[in-house]
Image (cartoon, rainbow, N blue to C red; front, side):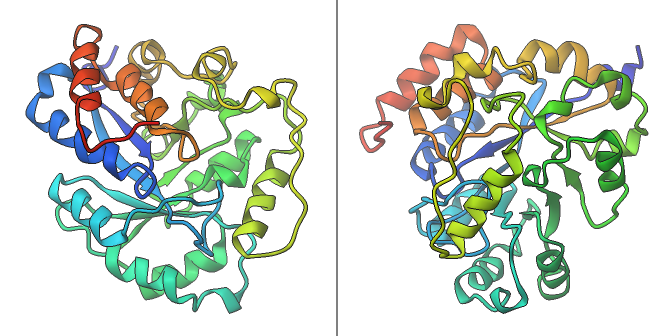
Length: 304
């Protein structure tokens, strides 16, 4: 096995830039002060999200309530890349002048030591942002639902994207993933903990429904046909998903293959569940109780 690949680190892209500010304001100091409590083979690649009522938002209907200035300051203080989730796929030219979204771009374009990015699904918006806010890097959103491998390969070849998040149903297509070049592999960002039904035929329609809601359209609610839709998100269910990527997979399969970027979903979940993701994916088992205690004993943090 190539020695360089054995030394590769996993970079996690975490949910809740605006949604879980309080959690990260408690977690990031721990991660810095007690780095030995966490796996030495992983780092925080970015924290992503979108505020509530965000026209350009997609993937989830935004509910992040934290003031953008505070979120930007926190990321800058800890040298973490902030990503704006602007993955609305149905934008028209009339939406590009939205004052709120442009103000967010102006605020986050200069990330200081850590370059900030935008997660994006619309080529129209991509063209606009590249010209207007050239300080960002760009991530091709999983909301494009790239389920065909040649779609993924073509997207990886687009120079305007630093990262591409394929549909989670390509996560275990190892025979084809191994045909990618090293440069292409370093652009792939796998969605690890998706709970969506693996055989769902309506994933793209579901995302488009969210895009319409963020545009303020009066549209019917998307009805999920998943057999377990009524259960909502459960990490234990996600772990049984055929596309699930766990820490042993990352260490023993993906890193040796040359992949190092992994996205954790969860913007619409509670901060207590996000903490469980941080414990599972990043924290040494013998230190997990200490991390829980430090977080739970923070008198200003409401996890529920």
